[in-house]
Length: 264
Picture 1: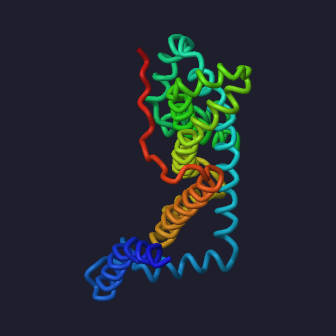
Picture 2: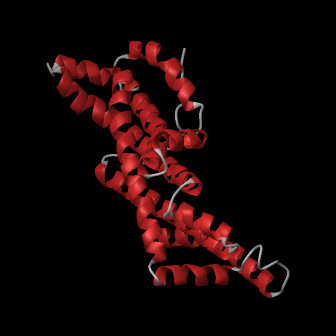
């Protein structure tokens, strides 16, 4: 417990010092409080939004979109990752096309998605799904294709059916990699959501930032930015705890970036 408390203090030390210096410089008049409002002003704006219910309304809309988009990305990426991991020859047909799509950032598709699907929820959820797909897909494929061959040989020796091998060998072996992809995918979904809401939305954290720009209220914009960071950290923390709960046999989590697609 002492170690956890120590790590928490160390993690909060730098942000606390930066905020303190920022506030002091603002109070001393060394910073333009209109262009860069002090932390106290941003917190006042945040508390006002929370008090009148505006913050909850925007935050719930954003979380709903992320939940829908992330769920769709998971449902599409997981089976496709399993397929390409189990049947490497399929990669010869799909890898060039998937490699092409992976190079295009989600934000580049926003104008086209709005043109094709309108400015309602469908276009936003589609952008979120696109953003979260590749991290989940690539890590799933990576985990399946790197399953220990000795485990597969033992399973075949004991007469397990192909389905039993998938459930008892491939799935437990790939689960840590899948969770890494899901965490990265969730992060990508959250960031792309804000971009989508900036371009076309009537509510959401991204819309809140856009409203602050139109009203020339930097404190409102920074309050929205602050909520983006806090919510993103909270989602990542919850997902990390969920990962540790569902994978109790794994004492240490291997951290790795999204595997690079190997088209040839």
